[in-house]
Image 1 (spheres, rainbow, N blue to C red):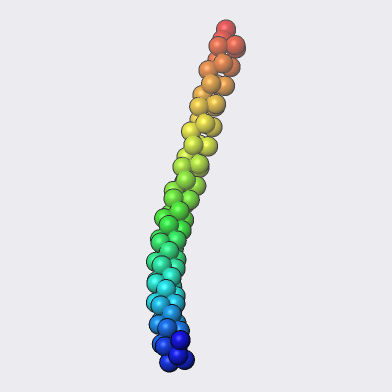
Image 2 (cartoon, one colour; image 1 turned 45 degrees about the vertical axis):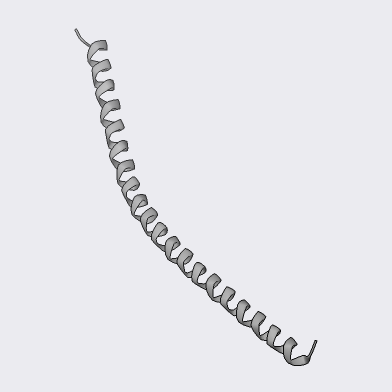
Length: 78
């Protein structure tokens, strides 16, 4: 095999590897973009769940206070 043919094949392989590298970089950019969108959605959900936790705590507090008031009324009814 002549050196010219070998160099042509090597150049072809280098071009193929460059294309593979470009495709992998493109996939990596798309995955990073997707991860950023998912992270933004989760951050929004976290803030919503924090609000729900606060409301739930208030609701449980009101229910417990109502039960205690009812029990005390029944126990100390004259």
